[in-house]
Length: 266
Image (cartoon, rainbow, N blue to C red; front, top):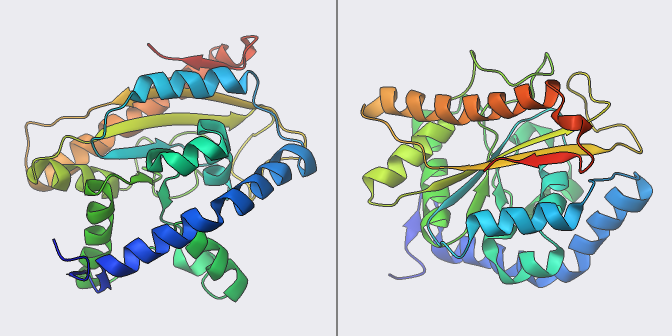
């Protein structure tokens, strides 16, 4: 396939250039993020090597499209999760561990420095309630990336939870649509559901408190639906969100008191 073929207003060449430049600067910028999280903000994930090994074993060498679907409580959840999922050198060699992100455009696009950082961080801006043609182009970009071996981190709730719990009633269906579209194209995507929560986090916030210790849980899911169209998208989205809600229930049932600070579902 010609690399200059246009996908939703952005060329294959454009996507490839962004991925290449991001990978080029990754050995420099990625460790800087980790230094910020670990030593400036003093964040801690107990038994981090075991967490990473467990996720790596769950995913194996499977190259099917991978969506990473976390709960959402703070503005920097995606950065913390990238640190939690893999060390920088593994993220450098395996694109699945350095996922693309879809931040809300209004959160950063008005600041040139943030736009530059987001570009190098493999971000594609999402515009909420955009016209249908613009949304279609955006989704085409995501499908293109996922089918080419890249991974995508997307928050299935659609926004930060305002009450501090996984939103199981009023959530977005965008994740379900992406998965359903991939299935109709013959792909069988997998979902890495990740529940991340600071032990001191009560509700949503901009960033977690300094010195926070994080609980992390995960499960690999392959959602299915016997329905079609919007019903299938809702069904798939519901399965993902309820998987996160089940992990949250385990947290509040006492899972966070485990010595390791996390529980990997089998």
